[in-house]
Amino acid sequence: MSDTASPESEEPERRPAGALRRGWTTGACAAAAAKAAAEALLGGGFPERVTIRLPRGRRAAFALAERALGPGWACAAIVKDAGDDPDVTHGALVRATVTPGAPGSGVSFAAGEGVGTVTLPGLALAVGEPAINPKPRAMIAAALAEIAAEYGAPADFAVTIAIPGGEALAARTANPRLGIVGGLSVLGTTGIVVPFSCASWIHSIHRGIDVARAAGLDHVAGATGRTSEVAVQKLYALADTALIDMGDFAGGMLKYLRRHPVRRLTIAGGFGKLSKLAAGELDLHSARSRVDTAALADRLASLGGGDAVIDAARAAPGAGAVLEIAAAQGLAGTLADDTAVRARAVARAALAGSADVDIVIFDRSGTLLGHAGP
Picture 1 (cartoon, rainbow, N blue to C red):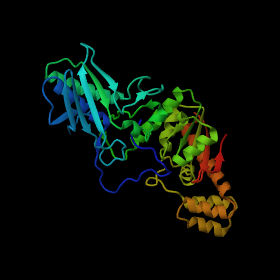
Picture 2: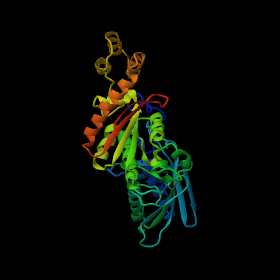
Picture 3: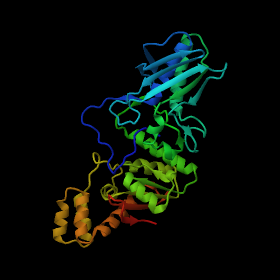
Picture 4: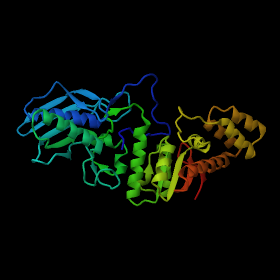
């Protein structure tokens, strides 16, 4: 699961130039807010800044944005700073309300406003549980144990995490198709947000596959962007849970499916992205792989293109221009099919026979251009 917004086109948000500022995960913010609330509940008052230990040992300090105390409860909140990452929860308020737990109960968790509930199997949390992931739960429990020890009290607390406005924000994440309803997930394995990290997106791909497998689906589709996703869902009448937001990370999806197979995989995308896959590239981002227009020109030559067409293709600025040149000669569909065949071979090799594969190539309007496979 990831709070990184799904792309609305074939190109995800561009990484800005220069050094990027790191931020804090929702899990780290929740742990800090819970610790501050627990300190107030234990009679120590609210700290000006609350410090927690992150999973890898580093300590981090947070300023409180809210604080409230009442009979048998305390509440604190922190504004999430995601650094320079395009995280939909950047600037969101992460609030923890803490009450005493029954003796020996340890720490229990509940979902407040804007935090989702798990409704489908396949995730690390059981159906019916609040979508507070295992690592954040461990961070919160450790922070509470630390403050309880400081005050000589047992670490028995009931913790409710809320993210006001989280339900609306969750519509921009993968949560709805993962069966997390009512809001966001509380995430973070290290407590630190690394801007434009591939890891968070690939983690979301893996969880999508887990949910599809747990639902018993035998056909999933990974798409490079929103246009191709809508088109492939319509083409095969796929359920939302069968759609994997692959983005540029074909390799991340294929490697996971090799270890966690389904019967059938469809890869859907535009001609440019899938021409990279056809050339053996498993990372399709424009910053990390390039369209080989010379190779596309060679393919046009083998498909019957004349010398002038081949020369024009070699000089073309990108895949879209090559496709336009091919279309003028009536070869667009042939070139797209040929590209799909080659992309399918690359995908099948990466899967090592763990799934059957078909490739579908769409234009920017969602019209099918090329296809290979069953």
